[in-house]
Length: 223
Image 1 (cartoon, rainbow, N blue to C red):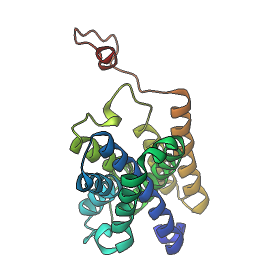
Image 2 (cartoon, helix red, strand yellow):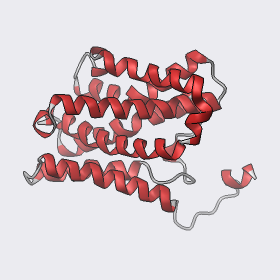
Image 3 (tube, one colour):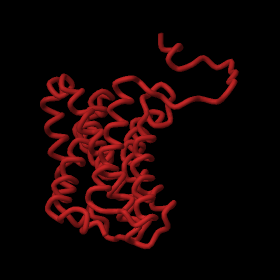
């Protein structure tokens, strides 16, 4: 089904772009954490490939694409080298990096969902793996960097929700027999635009209703 939506060459090119941008974000966090060159490379690889690797292992697509396609494996290393030498310049174009990261989020939540369904998973499980494909690398990145994963923090703009919207749109299209290149592209755009709007207007998920806690909020404690 995935090959019916995108030609293999287009799919590969889009994957490489998404992997590169995700790797940039991992490498930048490694620099901020004062990691050495090996740590920068590891965080770049994990951020870029972690979600897809998890998905492929769960659905039995082994060996995972991350290890069968040299381009997938070397692209994060190129991103790590770029950040290692030019990280002050990369930091200055962080807004542009975030835009491409949002595009990668939209693409991977869709392709991850479709691939999981192709391997025989149900609609709900496919959507869950689509979400994992999109955000899994970022979770692993934050855990390795000894941080609370960004998608679990109340003070971060919506990240998982756009991926959920994209994955849910895909499974609904599958359910009603309307999945095609147009509707899958619309799902990518929906996730992408929602993420951009969340960054622009700082949309955040609600916390527990009527929450009372003696624990100081992280943002307040830092000031």
